[in-house]
Amino acid sequence: MVTTKKILITGGAGFIGSNLALKLIELGCEVTVLDNLSPQIHGEEPEQSPLFLSIKDKVKFIHGSVENQQDWVEALKGNEVVVHLAAETGTGQSMYQIKKYSDVNVGGSAIFLDHLANEKHGVKKMIIASSRSIYGEGKYKCTSHGIVYPLARSGKDMASGDFNVKCPHCSNDTELMPTDEDSKIHPSSIYGVTKQVQEQMFMITGKSLSIPTVALRFQNVYGAGQSLSNPYTGILSIFSTRIKNGNDINIFEDGLESRDFVYIDDVVDSIVLAIFNENADYKVFNVGSGYCTDVMTVAHSLKSFYKSESLITISGNYRIGDIRHNYADLTYIKSEIGFEPKVSFAEGLVRFTSWVNEQSIQADLYDKSIAEMKVKGLYK
Ligand SMILES: NC(=O)c1ccc[n+]([C@@H]2O[C@H](COP(=O)([O-])OP(=O)(O)OC[C@H]3O[C@@H](n4cnc5c(N)ncnc54)[C@H](O)[C@@H]3O)[C@@H](O)[C@H]2O)c1
Ligand SMILES: [Zn+2]
Image (cartoon, rainbow, N blue to C red; front, side):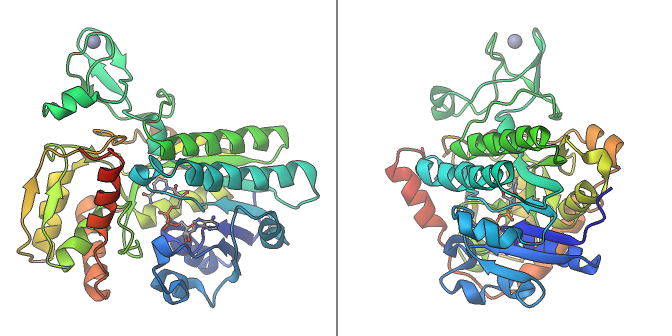
C-alpha cells in the first residue's frame, strides 16, 4: 500500500488537477504541481486564473512544461507518486494540430518515462489520465451480428442526416451498450490516439520497471472549476459561456448524441482510490457515471437553470472525429477498488450552474474555434 504523502501532479493547475490537489492536501499530502499555465485554459493572464489561484499558495508550484526534461527533473525531486494529467485535450483541435498534440501528450510522457528508465528516481507509483476517446465509437449490439465495435461514421451518412452508428458487417443500425475495459481500442481522433499511446506507454514502462501504474479512462468530466474560457472542450462549459454571453446554441447532429457526464468530485475520488489502493496496481479502469445523457437534454437543462432566452437549434452540422455515444461500464472499477459515483447528473448540474453563476462572464471564443475547424474542412 502506498503510504507516501509526496505527490507530483502534472497539469495540476487544470480542472481535474487543481481539484485533486486540494483533496490530497486535505488528506495530509504534500503536493507539487508542474504546469505551464497554458493560456487556452488559463486565459491571457494565466497567473490570475481562478484555477491557478485556488492552489497557488497550497502547493509547490513549478511553472514549466512536460516537454522540458529539466522541468521534470525539478518536479520529481522528493516525490514518490506521479499523477500525469498535463495534456492538450481538444478532440476537434487535435485534428489540425497533430504535431502539437503528439509532442505534448506522447512526447511529454516519453521524456518522463525515459527519465525513470535511465536515471535514479524515487517514483513508486504512477497514475495516467487516459480517456474514453480511445474507444472511438465504443460497444454496440447488432441484431444479426451480436457485439460489434463500429468504425467512425461515414461522412456520406452524416451529410445525409443519418447519424446512427452502423454495424461494421451489415451496415444496419445498432444498439448502444455500456463500454467495458475489454472493448476494442480504436480512437477516431488524434487526441484519442495520443491518449491511447500515453496509456500504453505508462502501463508497459510501469511493468518493465516494476512501478505500480494505474490508467484511468475518464468519461466527460464536468463541474465547478472547469475552464469557462476554453472553447475547444467541455460541452457544459461551452454552452454555459454561450448562454451567459446571450448567444444562441447550435447543437450538432440531431441532438441525440450522448455522453457519460461524470462529476469532478467522483473523478477525484477515483484518483485517490487509484493512488492509495494497491488492488488498483497495473490495472486499467473506466471512470464515469455509468449513465448517458443526450446533448439536447444538456442544452435545455442549462437554459432552464440559467433562466436564459438563448435559442437552441438543432443544425445537422457535425464535426469530423466526434463520436455518437459512449458510456462507461463500471463493473470492473467497482469490484476491484470499490469506486462508486456519488453525484447524479441532476445534482451535478445544480452544483455546476450555481458555481457558474458566481463566476465572471468569460469571452465566448466558440465561434472562433468553429471557424478554425471550417477552414480545415473538419466542420460540416
Ligand atoms: N476533462 C475531461 O472531461 C477529461 C476526459 C478524459 C480525459 N481527461 C484527461 O485528464 C487530464 C486532465 O484534464 P483536465 O480536464 O483537467 O484538463 P485541463 O486542460 O483543465 O488541465 C490540463 C492542465 O495541463 C496544463 N498543461 C497543458 N500543456 C502542458 C505542458 N506542456 N506542460 C505542463 N502543463 C501543461 C494546462 O495548463 C492545464 O492546467 C488530461 O490528460 C485529459 O486528457 C480529461
Ligand atoms: Zn450486423
